[in-house]
Image (cartoon, rainbow, N blue to C red; front, side, top):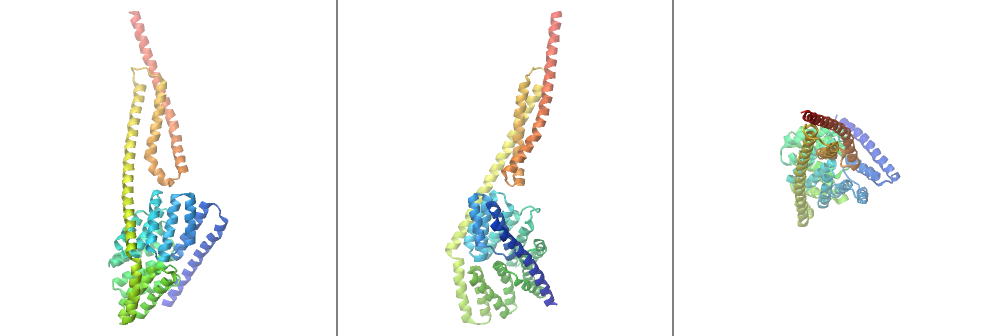
Length: 466
């Protein structure tokens, strides 16, 4: 039965892999025929997104081309995306946590500036993942929550893809905090949502996180079922990062069950991948597990060898220079965030004041027009009404602009052409209304002037008769 289940899993996974490979190949074939820079950028971005969803990795050559195009176009949104992809490559492929963080923090203000929530949430989740590798769970969960707070709208095509990253991060966090029930809750939600993303990586993550949660709850039979399901998919997983996260949960389970031979196979796999890709995150985990395995087997010489290897890699990752640089990056981001919040609060207050001033001016002008149009004592030139009407029109337009500007920015994504078209449409609605009101006021004014003149004439005739 177990073999049949594994065979079915492998068949469907191979089918999905073939389909995704075809998509990547089609995009790569389209790229040489595309000369327009912005079109090339979008195609490369799609290739990287499919590649990342398919294998959990990124192509450094494509990421560098993205950066070149973004710099040529001098576009903040494009720069944010290119820095993000360079960071993904450095983090997932090379295990260079410090430099990856540097690029992520470089991209973050650009993504926030352009109000690109998809990119902003992606950056926060990527930063959280780096802090997981740096064994800093406090910062990891903080940035994971920021990623959730900045998720794009539910109608966005990548909403589910971003949501599963949050659920994966929370399940991992609660496992590290020894709260298996909460970890299981997020792992099951991840399993449900991963089916909508059609991504094997997140299905893989959901399976091994569920297995780890059951293992932490001492429900060994269920843990074994889910770990076996994960192992059935492992052959098709090419993401070093995904394999590392699986082994960080699976090898401790094997060690706890005293299955030293199996745990040694898994730890050796981590070391081999680490050496193959020169990835310090993989090598550190592999050496640490090998030390524990030989300690448990009472093989002191081998345990000492891997202990030295672990200490050497640990020193490279957590060297004082790297630690200082990471702390400086985090501090600079904290200061930038505080300053940005202060600027936004100040801009919101200024906008509120401007709206109040516009309302006040509109109220005064409207009162003057109504007074002049309806007063029965003063003869007024119609040109005065026309002049005040124009001023009122401008004030109303400015008021609506102030009121609707944030909404227009959000729906047009800061596109100046779309913003201009929206304002033109508003003006097109206001001008006919203004003409009708001006006609009404002028008519009232003429009628009022006639009545005043008629009353004055009657009075004069009465005085002459007397």
